[in-house]
Image (spheres, rainbow, N blue to C red):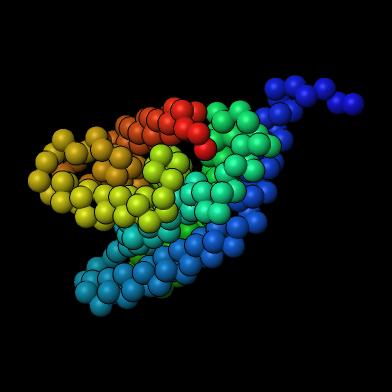
Length: 251
């Protein structure tokens, strides 16, 4: 009989959470729908750019503009991953099989990162590729480093907000409540604050945008590296809060 070591237990927990995640139809429907919407938006932004342009245009600026809208799909994916087990009481079965709550929730976030990373990379790259093909010779020249930096920034941003959304979902345990809170923040509260208070550049969405989206007033913005550190810190803080709350609840 193979001894049950901590490492083996962690690997089994990750495998179980990954299996549950990939077996959820909502996971693939949400990610596929997000990719489709992102391509439609990228197409619309590119057509609008071509109609109003009098010179060369940036593939990165236009191709990644849709990410600020497509992020909603990754937010919802994170929430569904965290809240799905509370529907029908499946969480009790999970905790019976994996009573170590810290390990179980950590494994869930790792599994979510494994699924979200390639989905985010494909989503970000697809919009840029579509825009590049449509712009053709009207596209402004870009270096490989510029393209790679923007794509990696957008990809990491989507993964981090997915994990942060899962943490909020674990805290609230209600899908609708988490969706209202997070989408309300990303699409209403955040944009309103950015227009009025310069200090909000340290909040999750503003810091995350700096990872991939050009800021007009560079003196008032954080750098891509600082944005990545800030968003990572916010995500870690939310996950820790979710872990503490999870350990103190009955289910």
